[in-house]
Length: 165
Image (cartoon, rainbow, N blue to C red; front, side, top):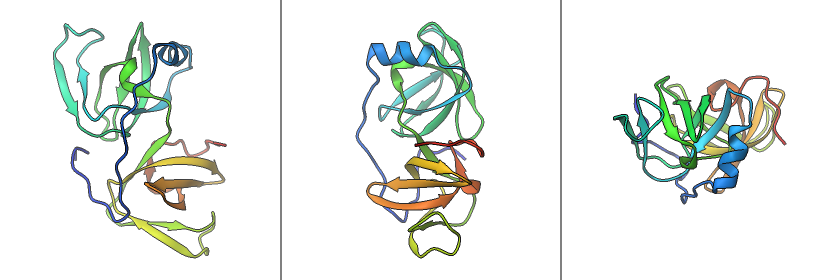
């Protein structure tokens, strides 16, 4: 399944921001693999690390999480939520942490990080939100201001043991 179209229960979209050149340089110094997100509303994935390589995919989804698996100069080899790999210019990526809801059922967003906490919202499969405060198998998930804590098992864009402030 491609994540060009998406279903949502909690509203989801955000503005595009492209990383400044100095941020792209900082990105290059990070240890791979690491998580990033697509900045603009349209971003091309290429078969190799240069504009001369053909585009293999056009992403039309700002904030889509990707995993950076290799760095070559200003290019980043990324893996998308479907496992597709290809090259993107580093300026198309940003450090904003996002995740996408996986699975076939809506994801419960709770008012605190506990399975018995009050249900605040539900996010349908394919919804992208910003993540923070990840620890002990839970992350704070913000979908356009609709905020709740979600279990990591249904998210792609965060490692199972990762801790985020």
